[in-house]
Amino acid sequence: MRATRTAEEMKTLESFFSALGFEPGKGSAGEQFRTAPFLAPLGNLEFATGKMSTAPEILIEVTGLETVHTVAENWTKKNSATAEGWQKVSAIAQTHWNSRLFTAEPVPGMVFGFWESENVAHGKPVAVEGDLSAAGMRFGIVVSRWNAVITDRLLQGALDALLRSGAKRDAITVVRVPGSWEIPSAARLLAESKSVDAIVTLGVLLRGETAHYEAIYTEVSRGIGQSQQDTGVPHAFGVLTCETLEQALDRAGLKMGNKGFEAALAAIEMAAVKRKIVAATVTDTTAGL
Ligand code: DLZ
Image (tube, rainbow, N blue to C red; front, side, top):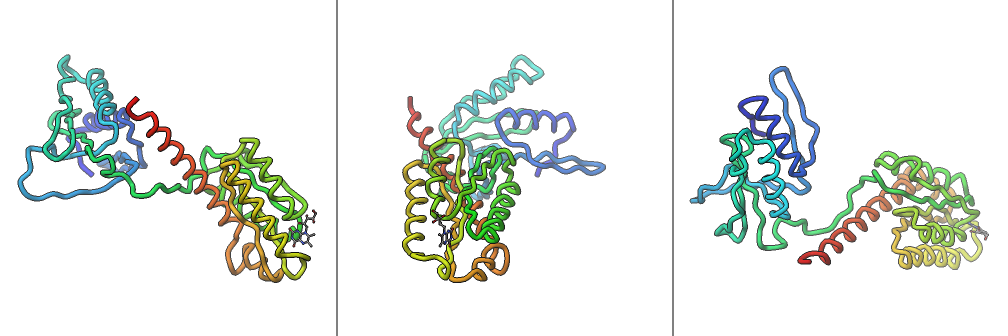
């Protein structure tokens, strides 16, 4: 956190960083102060010691330096009090640390350095991971009626997870099927309709009650997996396989949590992972065009 000299300077900085695409965070205010946080998709804090060139006090690593530079110049031209104000944004220059950098001074005396490493892997996350936000996503839930005392609880758990993670109620399609055997075909129809980002499959197979339990279980899991592979739509597996009704109840909201809730979280995460992988692939294939 850093205090500006005046409220006007604060507004100017907010305008500048919003123009650069930083996401505004939730600030706080007291009688004598107000804060305006800006969230970066990836953050790290770096200290340095030793002899450094006259670097700006605040250095911000970015991707797409040219774009950031253009936005900074345009903002400065529009918002600067003087006609020469845009010169407060320097040209992009090579640094001696394998990077390129420009400086911007949106407020007199506050110089920010924006830089991009020439090492493409620098500063990038080491893994692609999905977040657990379901906002803006559409889901299908395929749930069997067989052993409804269990599957209704799994359904409640799944809906709870989706809604609490930001999904809209009308973005969730619930499909009810007679038994677990029917789950794969309904899931596949839903996936092929391209109307959902991910599917949650919910059912319960009880060994004690189910003739040819192994055969049915193998076919149900294979069918769900195959639908996922063939369509590319993530399918979360929430089909319980238990010895007894009591064991199933424990996994449907009692001692062992709610597997419907867990399956829905997996669906959200995989839908997010898919989006990220697709976005990364699109970016890479268009790079350099
Ligand atoms: C027939 C049957 C049996 C015996 N057991 C179960 C079970 O434990 N769990 C389940 O979801 N469904 C069961 N079913 C129904 C089959 O999945 C299927 O719905 C019917 O055989 C009709 O195709």
